Amino acid sequence: IILQSAMRRGARASVHLLLWAFVAAGAPPPGSLVDALRNATLSHAAALGPRRSLKAPSSREIMRIPDASPCIQGHMLPLAYIIGCQKCGSTSLWNDITTHIRGVTLPHTIPADPAYGKKELHFFSLDKRYARGAAFYARHYPPCTTAGQARQVALDATRQYLRVPGVAQRIASLVGPGLVPLVRVITILRNPTQRVRSWFDHFGVTLTKGSTVDVDAWVLHALTRLRECARHQGLSLGPGGGVWHSPCRRLPSPVMDVLPGGFYADQLEEWLSVFPPQQLLVASFAGYVSRTRRVITHVAEFLGLPTNLPTGARVSGGHRRRGLRGESSGTIAAENTTGTTALSVWAIPGLDRRRRRGLLEAAQKNGGRKKHILSSDSRLALDDLYAPHNAAFIALLQRPANERLVTTPVQPPRSNTLKRFFQM
Image 1 (cartoon, rainbow, N blue to C red):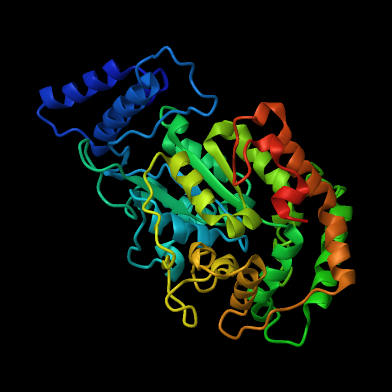
Image 2 (image 1 turned 90 degrees about the vertical axis):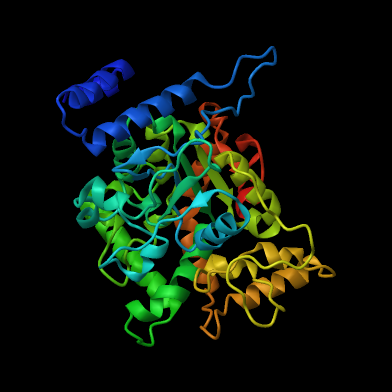
């Protein structure tokens, strides 16, 4: 209790006194106290920042992640989070970050972990895993690094975090008030109508148990169920209507939470209520596909880490795929089944924009998986559902209070429009 009180007040001296009290008593100090002292020192040093100069600070300057790794239970404490969205290219972006940005530390699986634990820990989004506590979470990361070693930033890339209420507050609580200013949150978003179609490609056949239900019948069923739930709860389907924080957010299979998953403004409002705008990076899926190198560079700058982007034309990031002579293909990663990246397709010389997009579209077949096509009626119905949410999302980016929000590839945030961000 004394330690927590001291940390809340930023009183590092009190933490030192507690540490020496254990030494004087001849008892080894608990690991939590050692971590607290280390983290308090790091947050204090980061808060001091660089020496003052005559040059005015940039509006994008934020507290730098220190060279030494903050700790939790003797292990590296994740300060970077890719929170989603699912079926928006998050796995492709994760592959590009881990391949082309130096200093990113990934989690590892521990006994009894599911297969997805190599990338997605789901610690903050699943109550059962969160209930296992900080020690369980810490075991997924390597021991803390020390000052003098190459900078390392631990990353938790769980695409479910964006669409589950309460995750942002859980992260802030675990990290602690002294280190909250060091957190970096990354999300990539795409046109929600396209996202629904991609989601059905990936999950629809499984959730409908291999039945002959096509994507249009599923969309009609999902819209009907969502409207019925909102009517029963007395909620509006528009932005701020309360659906995302209600039982309507996640309906029984095969509807799940795919439709509210495209309510981006409601989701980001919660994250912005916990973390200041300059600690969030919002990437455009369409922009990531067309300007991959720029997006990766922006992410690296956001994390404060160097890149090792290839200078040659033929490169391979992520998993290799046949047919492209070792190059990996872009929005395949957006379809999120092969784990490949967008960088290489856009680096192939001699291809015009139409040919490149053709390669990316072909990649969406995912090794033979059928690509479902929305009918015009289904597409219009989804567009009607998402139109006010898309407008609210763009308004959020253009809000003066969010001028320090990091957007990519189009900067600053107020320069984004529906056409620029979603390529609608």
